[in-house]
Image (cartoon, rainbow, N blue to C red; front, side, top):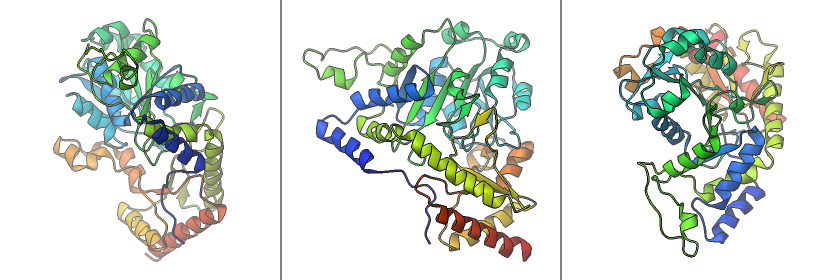
Length: 405
């Protein structure tokens, strides 16, 4: 049996939505992007959603808008995909890496210890669909002692008067905290709409704007939208209308807009997202039920009265094994036709960041999580029989590698 790791969900509705874009004669940013923004707004309860061409470009956009520059510091977890820190580096600033907790997400205590007068933003990262403790992070940045440390150096920072909380919500579309979207807690959240995500546009991202007063989020949406189009006062769709050719460039923007042909995929998916999420939950729960009988299997964080996951990844950890043994288990599993993965290699283990002086020994929990983790396939198309087969192969690989050793 061959089971891929994360195929996109493509049905006739997706195909028809994309074909309608092609038939319309308009394939770049236009009505379908706006429609997707409105659907995400309805789903999250956040009025202002800005779609862009990737999570990474969205993060760079927000950091540049905030005025992040050389000499500034942005706190990030060591346990995340490299894009989190790369966005900071693209702005010339320094990513300050901190350790995570056993449930994979950033440690609030570690954030507190890392804050300096150079700290301009914190980027918590939701892992596998499990949310960070955003309320504790927001409470932290609003503490008077932390505010007293903050030195604003741009007009936006002076207006905010504290550290910005920019949520890396790449994995958490559909996750909720206290029965509402976590996008309603942090200042700004960014979803990834990459091909392997729960909701996809092939490539893309969605910025959820939730800035506090005195910010006007409607005005901010309009401003950031211009920034995604080279600082141009009219998008291409508007310019094509009769008499609408004249435009101006009013800022040094980026070119990171999402095209309609990509938005069409997400637009078809989000209309049935509750159903897709329920299917992911089915797979997640079946894994948990089957692995619960094995003492060596450490299950990922489970839904509770405070929050529920988006079930983006099933992050299984194997108790009392080494990194090499985990790798050998993956080799055995792969022989059976089951594709698995690892989320993530901590950034301090990657050549770029090692060369910059980051050391994995400074992040023991991040390393422990990584060294024992195997990400299992989880998507709506998986049948219960396929899930059972996957679990059988994990158990067999454990018996071959660990018990035989």
